[in-house]
Length: 250
Image 1 (tube, rainbow, N blue to C red):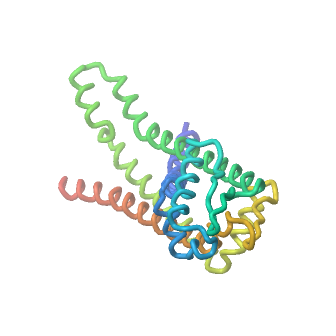
Image 2: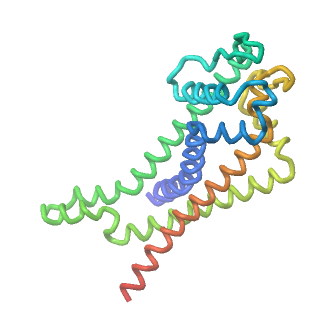
Image 3: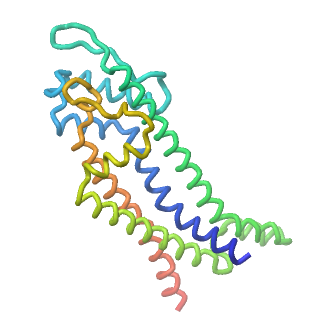
């Protein structure tokens, strides 16, 4: 039982970095502001010859595709000569399908991590409730699931540990990216993609024109900052609540 308890505790701690990472990725994928930020900063309209109105349509199409609201990310646009053309080549569509698969996996991990965190936090208290015989005590404990028999103090400590682990991983990733983001970016693609369709030509493939390497570096940086802030806030709350409780108890 001690081994099981230790394993479940550490799994709860590990779920925090996973939950914060996957939630941040999911938020970024579905945010039009992220796409428009990159289009504006890297002057994508000038690079591609696609006006800003059509770029917004492309961004919305990709968001809809990643959310499974449309079957294909392909979209027809009009060039400066007034001619209609399809934006993506077939191999770009294959790569986008692979990317969508990664985002689906991200969402599944997010749901699984959140479910485990909630179950781990509530199950011991729910078990106590089921053991109570008095309806009055059941009602009282149902209102304060996490506040019985010192359970909430242990939970707060584990939340702090999960947030600390998150900050350590973010710091390690940040240090590694400083010494070669491009190398890490390429290795990531070799690791997660089983085909060469991610190797695009910036002179003819719109997908890499729309999202250059600098865009991904910015997103990685902003995402890391967002996760660090989330970890600081959660960890701060998990530290402040027990501190205030002990102070008032004295």
